[in-house]
Amino acid sequence: MENPLTQPRRGALGFIYVTLFLDMMGGSLLLPILPYITRQYSPDALTVGLLTGIYSAAAFLAAPALGWLSDRYGRRPVLILSVLGSAIGYALFGLGGALWVLILARLIDGLTGGNIATAMAYIADSAAPQERAKYYAFAGVAFGLGFILGPVIAGALVGISLAAPAFAAGAMSFASAVFGYFFLPESLPPEKRAAGRATLAQINPLGVIAELSRLPNLGLLLGAIFLVYLAFSGMFSYIAVYTLDRFQASPAENAVLFAVVGLVQMVGQGALVYRLVPKYGEKALALAGLAVQAAVYPLFVIAPGFAWVYPLAVLSALGNAFTRPTLDALVANHVAAHEQGRAAGTTAGLYSLTNVFGPLLAGLAYDSIAPGAPYAAGGLLLAAACGLIAQVKVKKVEPQIRPDKSG
Image 1 (cartoon, rainbow, N blue to C red):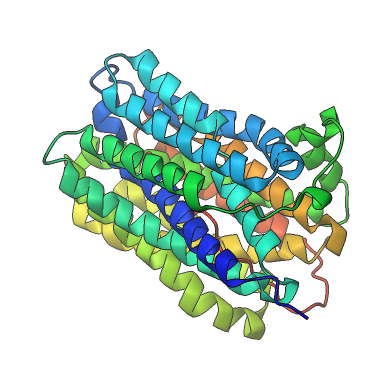
Image 2 (image 1 turned 120 degrees about the horizontal axis):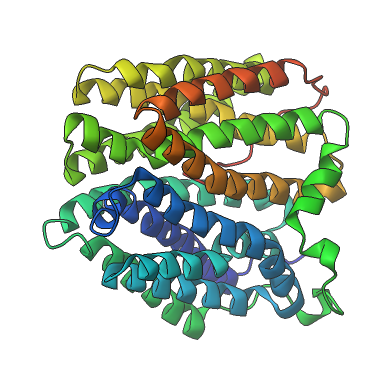
């Protein structure tokens, strides 16, 4: 039987991994500079959360429609247009000039942000079923490397200008789109594509979340995932603002901090999680990761200096490395094979949804209560997530850990 992963397709997968790498690196290039650019137009921490929330809201609403379009018309056109949309969004963000331009830039990037989901579908089309986990793992490495290198490159480019990282991200995305237009083959043949028009149920993310939440244990799992992502997105969105306000940290110092977080998460998942899950199980490891994060988050409030932020961030990142893949595995182990795609899409949708509300709520707490309020609240949310996971009845199946797609 011919291996469906032919040599030309292997070359195409190289492009896919580069696309995932550039996508994560482009987003992480903006992380260290976002508060500094935003404060040229608004002094409020909430504005930083607004820009993050607008992107995530647009991505949450557009993801089901983009997924259906890739099923109907193929992966190639949707992937190329999505990468091109990211290039336009980054370029507009670099141009700036007014707050509404930054908002428009993030909106465009979010609405066309189907490149990650479409790239993962491309891998599924291209790899034999027994090989998909291996190729998804390669995708996880691409995400991790992009997250690590993005802040490092941003720290180097801010010496040119604050806008230089945004322009660099746009240039890389544009080059990726041009390369894909000329060299990327289609992975979904016409006979396997969806027919007809999309229904409201197929493009409604909230309906799918509500439906899956009614299944046994999934309500607890999805509720815990929502709390975890809400705490993480709120804390992570403001760590550069917090270190700037409290410790007068520079963009380069924050860039190193983000790089350390990315490195710890990648090493934690790649070197520890896969070894510990067979011995202790997904539930125990998820609870351990949540407990570490719940204990560490409030300590950010009392850190006496910027140097103390590093060990706290390392512990938090290690706990997150234990938590996210094990929660994904628990969800996968509680649904049937024909529901795996919807389950994975639902957890991704929850991540986008919390990226809307987490930064906004954290920004309100930061401005109205105290700069440390998002960290104290995050610890309480993670403790509540521990309580939900403790009630989950684990099915006796072989561990199935998925690669973390956020880096």
